[in-house]
Amino acid sequence: MHIRKIRKALEGIKEYVPGKNIEDAASRYGIDERDIIKLSSNENPYPPSRRVIEAIKSSAGKINFYPDPNTKKLYGVISGYTGLPEENVFVGAGVDGVLDTLMRVFIEAGEEVIIPIPTFSYYEITSIVHGAIPLFLKMDDNFSIFSDEILKKADREKAKMTIICSPNNPTGNIFPKKELIKILDAFDGIVLLDEAYAEFSNYTYIDLVDQYDNLIVLRTLSKAFGIAGMRVGYALLPEWIKKACLKVATPFSIGYLSIEAAYASLNDLEYLRCVVDKIKKGRRYLEDNIPFKTFPSEANFVLVDVSPLESSFAMEELMKKGLIVRDCSSFRGIGKNFIRISVGREEDNRRVVDALKEIFEELH
Ligand SMILES: Cc1ncc(COP(=O)(O)O)c(C=O)c1O
Image (cartoon, rainbow, N blue to C red; front, side):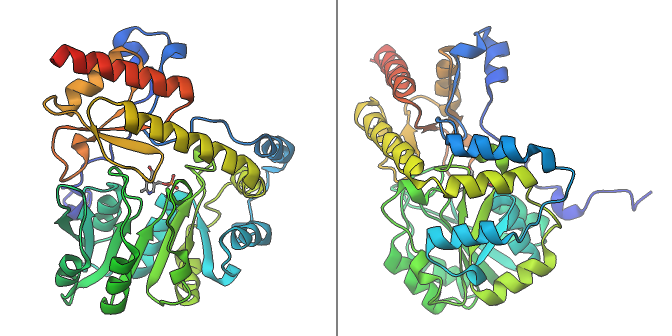
């Protein structure tokens, strides 16, 4: 029976904590589901473009076939959108799925993955699952971290990978390009740059992909493109890494309808721009009007320091008012006073500001 056990390495992993959902809030506080707004998972508050919905409808009758994961048309449209050749594109089931594939490609048991924190918690989970040892580096009070510190850690024989998230979740800030270049120049291992929120930002470093053979940039259609439910993400990467990804990727990992939806949404960039514009305006409104301290964001969410309140209390108070936000205390290294609010539609953002003003006034 000693064999009937999960792997030892998994014992210490805490389950990934997603943002709370609408049903949780409705049943907990007896609120009508229609009055609840979910701003806890950095989803797009707007529905996908009409072209996407039509593409899904018109291909629904073909799902008796397996999808072609290397479909030329999806690779072609991503190549057109990013300006990189298809040889430098690898598509997977969301950034999460692509991350798993990359871990399978690179990690030998016991190798180290450098992770500046606080950040997206799946990096830690997938590293451990694949036998790596995460090395955490804490950002400073402004959530900055410098290449020197990272390179000091990276100067270890077993440091295989460094993961940088820019804009970073949950803090919203950018990792400076010159710092990234210093790491790329000096680090022997692989640099994973997660740009899941790039479309909301003025910064992207995909131009570096063809200059470095150790840089991988991750992108998703879950955020700005608004098709989180379809689970499509991609990596921009050197060709030698793409070849290895194709060897180990789960067969048929992206669904037929997901491929069609991704293709349609990448072909409607006007809709993308319109949605991104509205979200940036909403972000500005939240940053300017939330009475607690906020941090400048380049993403579709805003980090709020609710001190002296604890984040769990602030989250519950907002939930009572029908607003679901993210209590950040489950993010390693951020402490107990931060909540993260995804930018919603105009009326949602107004509700958030009004609710936080009420909470703030009760304090003073
Ligand atoms: C930084 C970051 N990377 C990746 C993801 C997941 O992306 P996907 O939906 O493409 O798996 C998220 C989701 O919140 C995220 O915040």
